[in-house]
Image 1 (cartoon, rainbow, N blue to C red):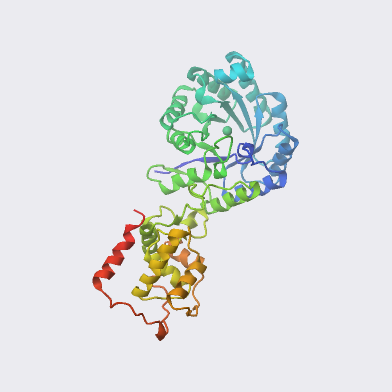
Image 2: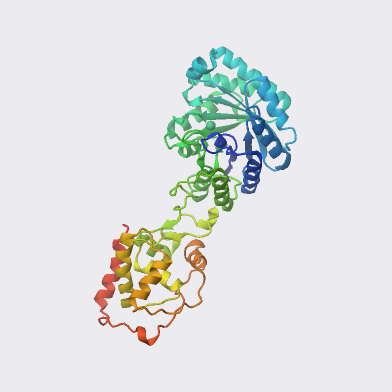
Length: 448
Ligand SMILES: [Zn+2]
């Protein structure tokens, strides 16, 4: 079966930029837009032109130079907004006007102070106006998931008849549950006449941590556009995270038979660029692009990783643009990882020597969080009476680790061997097969 194509609508520069601490100036937005283009997103929502002069200038600048993706500008459902958006999009090779209007009773009553009938007419008129200017028109009933279902269906039908080409269903307040959101998309598909002519889109917020799950549920129910942001930035708890949606489909094509045109190797560079521009870091355990997403500390994990990365990695770091995976030497590390690091530093030890270093390493790792190379060198010096083995030329560390853990292809079976000088002959007990066996097993006590 040919996988269905999902349109990736990136709103990092609009919804994302609205999040606290994430505002960007025009050159920064332009730089980010170039990276989104390299990433292969289908639509870039470049801003909300009537919101400020800066937003207008950013949409205009992006529309003028980014030629491949569709460039969208946001507008409330009124003439000044729509005309301003259209003005900003004049130079776009593929412009889109994105009109929104809240439809839930709570928004109609307290925010807009209009009746449902007025809301229906305003939505229809706004889409007609946008359509008179631009072929590509998207409409979003804001707070759709808290809107009365029958009224939502009427609104969707009205904007489809008025010429909308994409109908976006926002879970504006991040309130929906995955199965519920999927059912809503299915109901819209079943009950709105003419809906098959338009693209249904999902726009999910992460207030309950369900933005990605809700988006995937929408796709399974027939949505063919997903709105998302780099690093999941956005209002409050953020939007659905682009990198998670893309990689979910890529890692599990058996469950999600969908494809995107995203160049996954550009995900990490995009994430890094956004953090660098905004100064807002990504949480270390963030899926796909967090600092720890490919870090393995637990001994059993490190041991498995060094034998075959497939033991603990469902995707390679390189597939998302991370240079290599990181084996963190800490108190949960096993002998295997310690030995590899020693060899990378130019030392090779026999089993008993390594045992001695390992015992000291565990004591030290208990005191400090991460054992750095200089700590390890100190340990090695102590263990061998202050004498130091001259480091031999070996592959530099990142490369060696990358070869071991990142690529999943060439895998060093046995690192280079450096014979020890005679004076380093160990003075410990003779080798005991039981002890050997025991210490092998010991590695597996960590990190279960
Ligand atoms: Zn939003």
